[in-house]
Length: 328
Image (spheres, rainbow, N blue to C red):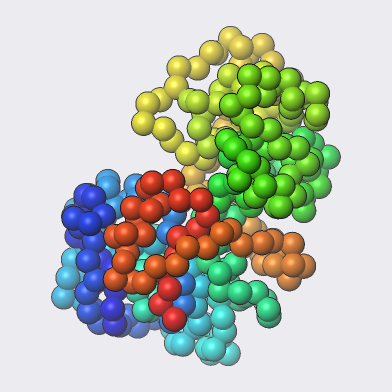
């Protein structure tokens, strides 16, 4: 089979190549998926740039890794202990490359059966490929401290992938959603996702717009703690939680007394180390939302497998929406 591959960390065009490797066979509890779309996330950039020799595994005659955690496809083989009736099932995929080299940037991948989740009838490959890390991260950020129902949630970067699903899943959970964006195009995307209030964080009175329009917020879902902490502190109500799911190059200096004064909670969230039961709950509730037609895809930008390096560079350059490799 053909697969994207790298065996050393570095820039996309320097290290990513496409190889012919042996098609994997599913082991006990696993399924093999014929990949339709392989989705690219910022975390895939981090892995490519920061992988160590300990991160690489045997891939046929090579040692390295096939990138990407998310995607969609059709199950064509199952390992022992898996219902044979799953063969032929269309699925959305999460955490495909965790602990082994078989990411989704290949014609086939193998992964634990529970990480290939049945796509409801009528749900497109494009929507399924947008889920995985973004939607499951958003779910954890919303629910890590209990239900957000009845609360006001501030979602930073509402036009981003995690922000998009934090808006939609937050509305499903019964929260009022305020979001920040950087311009009109992104504001339109956030409104289309269902945000109750959209504010340009570059406005000098952004905090006042949020407080006047929604009041103090009870939870902040943050993509850039370093850049946005002053705004977050200005609009957070007493006892609020700021949960951040992305790391910046420089760690922030925290105004500890100001955090203490309002009894704020500062939480850090990472998809790869999220509790297993929370991941499974998220997969179940995301799929239920798909059945209710309550989730929408991000803007899709398709690339061929041979253009994997170009796709990675597009993500690194701030592409709005979701970059996918189309292997259909």
